[in-house]
Length: 308
Length: 260
Image 1 (cartoon, each protein chain N blue to C red):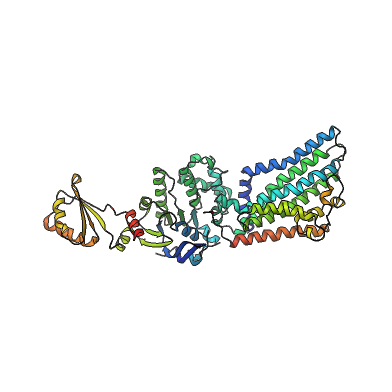
Image 2 (tube, chains in turn brown, red; image 1 turned 60 degrees about the vertical axis):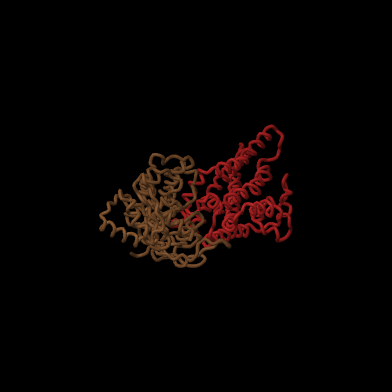
């Protein structure tokens, strides 16, 4: 698939403070999540790829074109900034139609597009209320509405789920997935791991302005050959299973959960572990009810990578 | 480009009408109307015998010329980028398909339109309050239209200059205050060409009666060495074009960072 967003050696400093350093990425259609703690460089990266900032070194291209001051790219781009900032004097509808008018749509078109965007974020009923009276969740949703109202092909969403209640988060996640299904390129940043997990498995871990890892969660797992993996197996024969695997040198630790009839193994060679497990299941006719990886989430990966 | 400017103009004119700042400055402009009412009442009571024209020239014109147009220009012009930075709304503008130059010109024109409404309302109403009587003639109307044009030109020039400061400096208000109410006032009293380094000089040059230094507040104009009217108009137009172009240029190439 052709990359929609290409960055090459992108670096940016704020005086002596490093924003991002030598970021080279190709981002393709679908959802890509930028994950990192506050101050990791996510927002700097997003501001550069949306033409809000210039890189000190390197270049960024969207659809093969440079972004800075490129109004042809801006027509195809939707940016949801992180800041909770609005033209507070306006109501939701005025805010959207006002921004849409900057695209050159006529009044009727602005109204139609604004209505569609308000419908998407389920805010039709509060469209005439001043933005200053909106709750945090509503403000976040109207910000997303302005991002999508002109039907862009590329969406850059900086912390789009922050401040939303669980229901609001679910709505926005569903919406973002709809954009993906429509073939759009969506870049989302977050410092909250479950949010990212709910959105996509294509993640870019960023920390101190550098890319730590990129890929889906399993690919990143493969990078972590020395990172212990947790594998929880629920079986009526959990004690026997533990005894058989205890002798293997790649099993680092075993924890029992008698109430659940489960055992948790810690290993740094997941493939070896599963090969051996398969053999045991076939040879001894073990009855396994459930196999899960309690730490197979982004939090574990991120914690490990950051500590490394 | 014209279309882009118009889009930005329309959006900001609408936004400007709804803003609290517009209400505040409209009220401030109305202070001239209030002053005119007080003076008229005072005259009707027989305490002030001078002609309405003379009072207007020597009193209200000073308010407009040395205070109101500077203040409107300063607060609207210097906020052209700073308000977007302070409110963190700049990305909404700079991620849209409009040239940065169009953003500055569009905002400038919308703010010029808003402040023109405030200014013209105050000029006309206060003039009529002071001068409307059975002897009111067409030439009086011509006079007030001339005042309005000169003050409007001054407003446009100040707005352009302060827009330039607003795109260039992070905190343009202090520099703007120092320029508008320090430099612009003090430099008037310097003889020779030094006084020509101000906007007010050219505006006063277009008001010939001030050169005579007569009237109650004539002392404000004692040092004026007027520039020829046509030259003054051209220089004021030049100030508008130069500083607006500089503002556009800076905004096109400069990147703006939020405080954090």
